[in-house]
Image 1 (cartoon, rainbow, N blue to C red):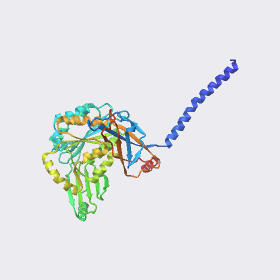
Image 2: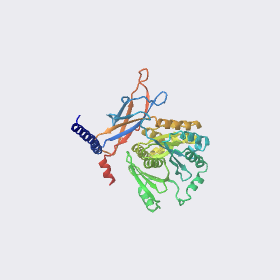
Image 3: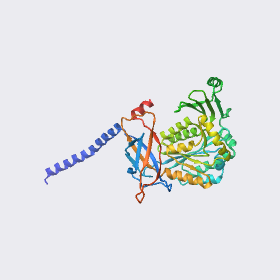
Image 4: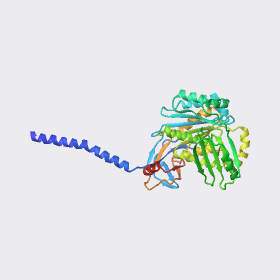
Length: 431
């Protein structure tokens, strides 16, 4: 090759190298622009599949084993990962109902607290725990004992405080209120069938400082108003469909308030984690039906999993419950069973705990099942708009055992979703 040919050859190589160096950024920029223009909205859900006979998770399923129905219509599963492959870190929130005549009878035992503490110490480094206690003292206070930590010492210190909330609730409540002004009002219940008299009474009654008011319209026409106070307590008012009955609950720290606070805190502090709530109580949690439905919506919108660990009822409550449930139902109140329903609807577990060892075992099962889930998703089309309602989801699993027979399985997943907004709609709502 002569000198002229070498020069032409070198120049060609230089031009080719320059084209390669310049070309990719232009293509990448174009790809990014296209990605920004086309925003694919995806609905994700986690699914736990257990063998009905053994109760153990099934981990070898494939996308073709799943059928997903949205309001009765099949959806193509476009995203799939097996257990643990793409799971988010857990934001696990334990809520302890410390009522002395309820779960507090067991939570005051050091051996029960140790069972729970030992299980939390086994969590992987990325998973974190928040601990909340409620129904403390006469005012039924609710407090955070720890907020999202994996430090075993911090969790142990927080959990060690729980027995004192049961044995000396008033003393603990007073200690927590040293920096606050003493509240003059106590929790009360008011039932009225005369709306005019009730309005006149409210006009003259002193009003505590409110920070949030939520109006919930039920399917049956009743309306519930939740007013959250500065101190975290809630005043509830339910007016029947015909307006003839008004029920008020003042200064309560109820299950709905605890769930709202837990999910809100997790969304703000741990937005990239999977929120899971574990409610530990005796199952008695008075709540208006409309309020329970609204709480379910919050869990589903947040894609949070609700789980319950339920202790035995006191003998007296077992006798009174059959009488109290119909009366409470007439008033629009669910006395017992709401925790189990929320667990079923959000894809969680509802477990019974009777013996001391049950607490550690139940918590281990809940945590294990949270980390043994399949992740599935389907894409929404551009013309599917947010209609404001919950879409019912049904997930079916068909699988065979080693002998080719159909396996009997239990499937746990959230029972619905609210359609995510399109980016333009989200921008409009935030202006």
